[in-house]
Length: 497
Image 1: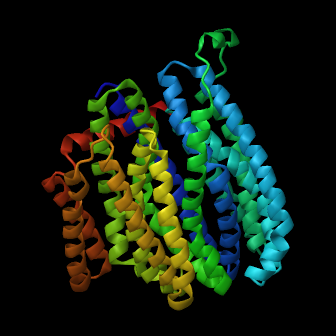
Image 2 (image 1 turned 90 degrees about the vertical axis):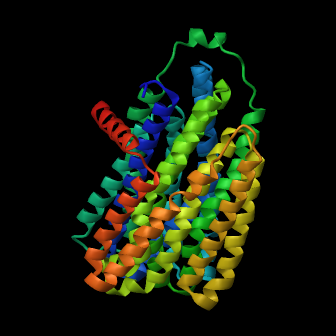
Image 3 (image 1 turned 45 degrees about the horizontal axis):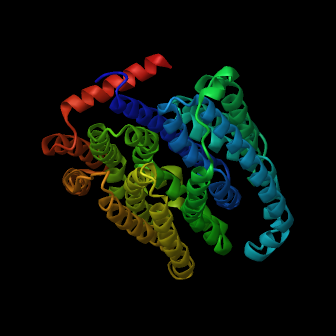
């Protein structure tokens, strides 16, 4: 594969975003799993509620800008307009700081009423103020910078920032563990680690990803209007914000019933995210890559990207999907026997995660082809369904109700996204490639289930992985030459860091 080819750039970007999501999901899960052994479930639940609240607000004020930068910085760079890319980034940072400041002020004022009315715990108010004044602004700016890094095909800097955040957080908790760490200590680790990650991203990574340019050349670039940017950002602000709120609603509502339920569900959700890590990474790399190819009018390369994205992302996700569907209680028991109560919810959330991950690929393609209205409609419909069902099902079913609401919403998102893609003439999706991984997954689940009953958990799980790899190769989900090529990309990317 030509090192400068679009497919190579897409694959390399996917590699770094897979690495980024592994850093976030795996190390992030380890962080919470270690805490679960050190701290009581109530403190874990309180921390998760406060972080979920902040993340929901960031969804509306940061992640929408992130998508805009991913799309338009790649397009401007493809059109040789680097000055416009930097102007866009500067405007995005200013906008995010202004909006996050306004949101922080509002939340600070209403936090006492929110804590006592919804959660019947005054301590939540102090925790909310802490996280909203420290963690929230820094994470909002980081979200903007990550969009710039991905759009500039420099996703390795997104990995670096997230790695600093995750490792710092674990180190701080380890130090604080010498005393009696509670919800306050956990959230302090979030705030300090986020500030460190922001400093590294802004002062070290940004000058390398988007270096300063000679202002004399700026006059030679075409003067782009901002109406199309506002249109894209506005729609995505609402859509991405709702999607983020949907992901956090289970923890937020369960905590009104019981903080321990929030902890059980939150840990199950964290583990399930590992399933969709590769597909979410591929979708992140696909947005700038597809936007670039649509600008160039290269439908052949775009078709190859889509085909590769669907097959390989589902193939990679299939490993964690099969073993978590088979034995969720085995992994929860490694944390603590008390968390086994979340096993059924984890199994449901694993299936949900796979649905949302594939939908994310379709959503990136729709955004790349300027179908923001369709993306917004899909997100609104599915998010409203999840939020309404969450409030209905949690009081009657509990943990499983929150997970079931998410599963129904994910199925809705997948169906609507695929239907929207089918109406797009510039994009072609192979239904065969989409359905092909189902056979190896079914084979692996069957083999694993039989051997778990006959020989035990460990033998069954190992056999599941082996059966999945062999059946994927036989059925053509993954090819030997693709494995060699992916391995070469990984090795080349690792050496270049």
